Length: 333
Image (cartoon, rainbow, N blue to C red; front, side, top):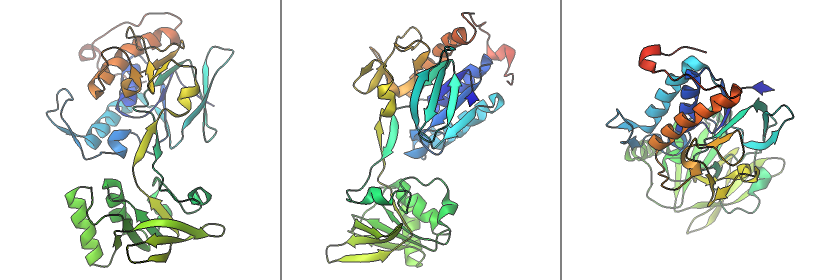
């Protein structure tokens, strides 16, 4: 079982910045996120989106902000458990919390920071009756390791940035990539659209538009998808079907942790952004209070204040000594 001073649920920008503020007070952090990479929405939904309201940056691309945050916390050596959902939380006799993920990973800490953004992201699944039968047997909703698809036949459904980017990337990994899209126009970046069309023209990717996958076939695992077009329904042999229709935010198991919830957000005390459960704080878009603004900048402030109270819990009520980093520099844990 892993041990930390602060267990952070959510590895988005607010979760990452918590590591920095905690590190200044020599508090060790462990982050858990259901997504396969750090960065939250910035990495998963709009990595190329420009952000204009981060102090000191007239403009910063979302994935660059994530990379800078990761670099900023390197000296504090946080632990990460990615691709696993925070499932069960229990209070131990020693006063600490024990978190168990959906994969059975256990982490113990006296303080919990919930920095889950808009909640736990779940994939938008296409309305195919038997799709659950093929999950982990040929149907994937998130690509964690591209090498999994090397020399395989892959069908990708979707028309946004994620579908475009992965179709382009896997064209040099998979045996064959087929893109299924319900429309003739794509919603992704124009540069990516041009690249995909170029791959199609060079016969490196197959593209079927005005179509959708309506059925899945196979015995022990996926073998075929049924593709419906205005003219007919065809069978397409494949090893993997990857529908990339985006992610839906949900509070998930956190809703069962006896926290005060208001409209899918966690109510907090603005004194230190603590919840009604002692030892649990909520920062960033997942919390709510009078005057709440859902901005990354506000989340950075919330976690900075909350870490001061977390220090008192970890150190039995002792108040942290506030020092400016311009004077102390960054000391490694």
